[in-house]
Image (cartoon, rainbow, N blue to C red):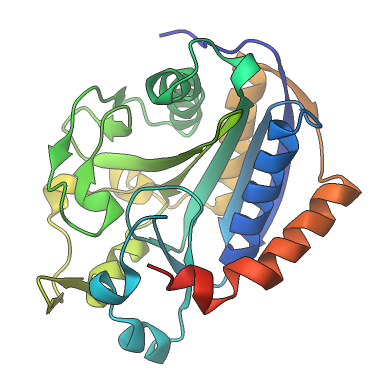
Length: 270
């Protein structure tokens, strides 16, 4: 498998931060690339405190026990991308933003294929070699949890366990793809807050569908170690320039944080 996009990309490394801010930053960067104001971006970041996010088109009120989530003290937001619910805790997250002119043909499959080599290389730098790029779906496609099934073009173990869950937002001129690598199984607590067929699901996800780096390697990997490994992978496979948000991007992310990602009108809108 080879990279489809071979140009230079902005490499942005961020610490663990408020998930609503993370989504605002991803959208601000998407707008920047869409408007031709930025080169393509690859960003690595994390979430603190833990937060549950749902996909752009999920019905939060029907699929998430929002009262129980609130009682547990977890934050909640809706992503700009599709996909299903994720409890972001003890994970490494990546985002890649490419303009239409940066990848041809421009489409979902091509973007996944372009990014997959970086993800697979990052896992190898962590010492995990049993990962593959899936070309077909496995698991339950109707479960509201992102990690209950592996979609086409996602990263899984050779045994079929989903390892990196990803989702996309595609506009007329650019695409945002971001995804999560669980470092531990802590995110599996999401099942306490999911509702299926109107009834709470209180059991953990079946082990055959879900795994984490700690479980696969048998040792703990810190956020910083994982971020460094994937940063190294990006630098190995593509031309990168160390970067940070521009003043305009920071201002736009700030605006999106307060007017969108912290508002019920967006988070509970469907």
